[in-house]
Amino acid sequence: MKKILECSKLNASYDGSDVLRGLSFSLNEGDYLCILGENGSGKSTLVKCLLGIKAPDSGRIILGNGLKTADIGYLPQHTNLAAGFPATVGEVVISGCLGRRGLRPFYSSKEKETARNAMKRLGVADLADRSCRELSGGQQQRMFLARAMCAAKKLLLLDEPVTGLDPTATSEMYQLIGDLNKNDGMTIIMVSHDVVRSLECANRILCLCSRDHSFFGTPEEYANSHISSRFLGD
Amino acid sequence: MTENIRLMFTPEFFRAILLPALIGGLAVTICSSLLGVTLVLKRYSMIGDGLSHIGYGALSVAAVMNLAPLKVALPVVVIAAFILLRLSENSKISGDSAIALFSTTALSIGILVSSKAGITNDVSHYMFGSILAMSKSDVILSVVLSAIVIAAFIFLYNRIFSVTFDESFARATGVNAGVYNMIFAVLTAVTVVLGMMMMGALLISSLIVIPTLTAMRICRSFRGVVLTAGTVSVVSFLIGMFMSLLLNTAPGASIVIVNVFFFLFFSLLGTICRKRS
Image: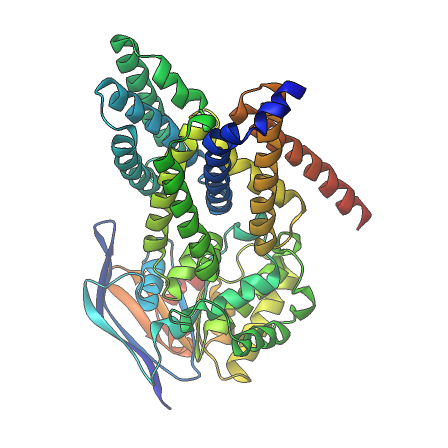
């Protein structure tokens, strides 16, 4: 197993207060990590550090196997972005290829192909010419996941991908993410609030419990630890 | 009316007044409609309006102090654009109230200074615009500006889309969204100052906002909105100019009214299309 990501002794602050202190964990290729934690526990700050948008105060994030931060496929937290915006699904999905373009101004036919494949993979190919204003919540998230696939070489970083979806769409989304992990060999990092579901589908759990305390290990270890009792309620 | 038409096509009038107005006006129109797409979709519509009032204040002060108007107004408005953009990004202070605060302050200073000094004629030009009095240097500046804006929209099109649609994703894919916001602030500031001299401080924000809103009534894609907004604004400008010369109406207001007419027409068209599908 090749190491794809390693965080060592990461310290980061948000608005002047420390939110991450001495955080260390590492992931292998093909891992499925769920990041748990209450609001304000530093999940979003960690995501920003991983994406290279924010520099940690100290500590290091090492990407393995030739991966660059721009190769991480990112699905941002649910926003009302698509609500009033005139853009077709095709336009949104191909914008995922932007990170690997360097300074060339236009998309090549290879990148158009990448976008088409991503849309097919996520079942939104027949929506390519539809405006994203007309999509349902589930279709929108699949569109954004397709965009993330365009950017991703090996690693997908999903920030609360099921927020705002109805139960059916939520199940479909988990199914799809699981598929991408198993069949397409994608390494998954998912920020989640759903502890039970996370324990079912992930093979690694990172819990940012309090400022000085974090848990990293397998779901079984997490379920047996005293930290989980607060979330699982037994 | 026929007298007006005859006058319009005398070579002297055409070369000295109409041609510079048409060239400069078209250039500013194209810039404001293209930049407007991003500003409207990023919900920064009011920035254009705020900047024009700040520009009005700066131009009034320049007129009273006998300084070259553009040399004072351009830097002031560019700096103001930076500040307003920063405020809009900063969630602690609400962007729209900050704009209201800045723009009314600048407007009041402008009115105060010019009324005290007793110069109202020059300054009222900036309130209502005077497209038929564009100087040669204004025209050249407008053409250079529009060349930059059009080139930016062709070569940076995909990045502009990404930054406009989803800034956090754009940042994650390595696009430096901050730089693009800055470029937009500068281009918008220059467009607003030039547009203000031609359309007036009161009307320039309509050139920025209305074409995009019009295009959004019928277009599904971002590309469609950009192209339609540009086209509609150019057509509205030409019709409005012609109308104002023909009927002796104020050019700026005529152009805005034509724009509004297109907006209503496209809204109707959009409703009919949606009902059918």
